[in-house]
Length: 265
Image 1 (tube, helix red, strand yellow):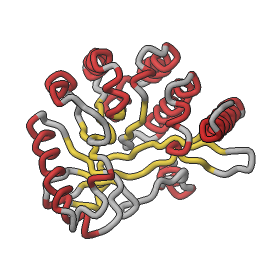
Image 2 (spheres, one colour):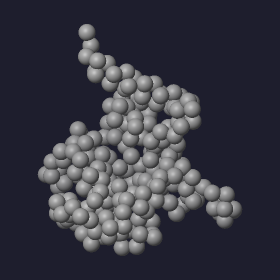
Image 3 (cartoon, one colour):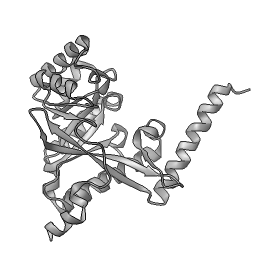
């Protein structure tokens, strides 16, 4: 007889998979855009992150954190990555001043539909590559590090930048930093929350900044929610910050408002 806890978890995961599959089938997917600001000038946006959202049968908007862990290793995870890339590239194409990061799993590197989507948009406008940042989570990158290195080498030559997301949350082998050549290091939120009064996290973030500087990577602190934490991160040399203090993700960014459309016209 199946363990009740396993049964509950499996039932939950099946429900998540069904919900995401329906959202994809009915085109109920969208991106929410969150600003990443400069630490030295928080009023200035360096770039935005496009965060995947799906809507369920009731119209409720569901963030990726509620379903990506379940779908990432499945075919649905690959489809989600394709849709995120498609919507992100369209936004870059429509807004020439936009710089945008999009999440992807290392598992999508060999997925032909994902590659074809990227190539199709770059064929339409090769300059989109210069404004695109692809974010790969630390855990995902470590599953196939050699593939990630080769993938990055090929696309960086076209102008695309790469960010190592959630740094510190997994088991990164530091020796790979000599091979990876990520452009951006995103510091996981567990080291950011309360950093103003947490001397251990201050020491860890200081070390992360030192590593990033040595390998010529820009640093971004995630989940910044208080002014005190923001000030501490700036004093530690973190380049950019992302979090509710500086702006929540929105599916209606400023450049999509009627006023922006009138100005563009």
